[in-house]
View 1 (spheres, rainbow over the protein chains, first blue to last red):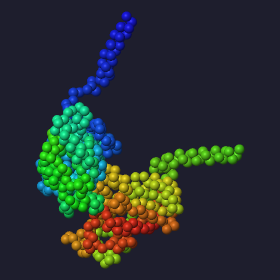
View 2: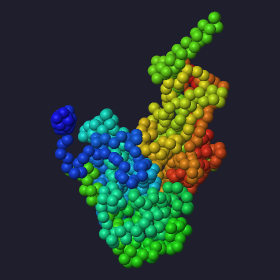
View 3: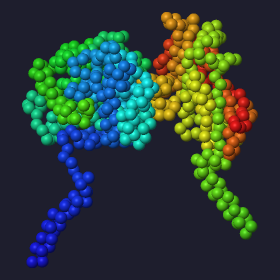
View 4: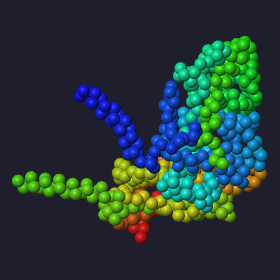
Length: 352
Length: 262
């Protein structure tokens, strides 16, 4: 009798307690229905990822800072004649690469010399650009803004334009508690947007965490990838963050790559090992976009490696032997690296 | 007994003194004052004219005019008898000859005392070159920042010379580099003694230290005699930049101290 009374009281408490909690939250703080991709922005390290290089330590991630960075990313105000934005050459539908462009056209339709890379998982990168010339996420946007064939603008003039814009003044006020607009704050906001762009929801991620399955071809492709590719395209970021010469050319006078930054001859012809996440979307391939399909890329590695003085030691025995079935299976695996959730996440889209 | 109270008195006095030290943050504190470093940029015997209308001649006989002169002075310290007595936190100054307000550098809250030398860096320390977006004098909007290969430009001298082989006769010296790893470190430390004079800082008293900076030595050295012809554009870190860096280490000389700038 007593014990059942107690049980009843406990049961009542179980029901009452959450109700009390909900009342305690009040109507203002109650959970609102959130559409997928419109959750508040946050940053967390996905399962199995290493610790990020950029940790938002001096630049805490806030919704307001992120939204300001997002607006700046899509605003051509950053270019000299307001025609080119970051989003012009970094499109979300192709993982923030430039769809079907070997080289992107910047201001006055001027053409660059390197292929626009996809943007994701940037918080894990110790440096940026194909040659690694930019050493910090917070100063990365300065490179395209000031490049004469990209946005051809000065940061001083960007600040002039932003400061006379009432919308930006109030956005800076809400993001940084004062409407003072400095280069540092512009870069902080953009680093919040770019740093929060995490791609870790591909079928490969589900497979590696045991929550998804692969076809036999995909499994074979993954095994071949681990045998032949993974030493440079290291899991789970799919890059070892190094610079390597993968046997494209016999000499590098037209673009010495990493050597332009270090000044060291042994770095001539070395370029960033790109992440292969979303690789199906980010064509064309290589630093100069010379290959338009993954088949061409695999043909290069299986039969097309060119000898040169700085060729990566991984290719010291020549090319990688791959049968046509091997290539089919590797490509099947590479398709699993596409992150549909990332490319359709409305938090990273241009505000209409 | 007497000794005991003397000790107590001294201890109390010390405590009071240390309390006052903590008040250094207050500008009215009698235990600190500001020091103004007043910089005069010259070419030999004449002031730098960066409008491009005055011609100068190097020891190699090359004539040139100046259109831009900017450089970073950072990490200031004051010394006495070879010992560092004061290190100014966050001391980053960009001297721009076209803006005379930037040629007077104020070191605030310098502890009261006597100093006989000043030490600083030409350039920006490596830490600030690898730590992301900076502000104040280090705002990249000042145009003293390489965006394609991250790093501050330490010393920028631009102008024209009939000895330049470029079509518009210009020259562009953008000297920097902060890495020891590939031997491109162009940061140079400068120590300037006051020739026996004393920089005396007391409360509410702002002495002014006058330094001359002779930019003709950028070309003449010592140690290196540089030639404009064929070297018109030096805009990447590397061995050639270091020759100029070794020269700019020797630009500064002591002129005099004003007891009070007011």
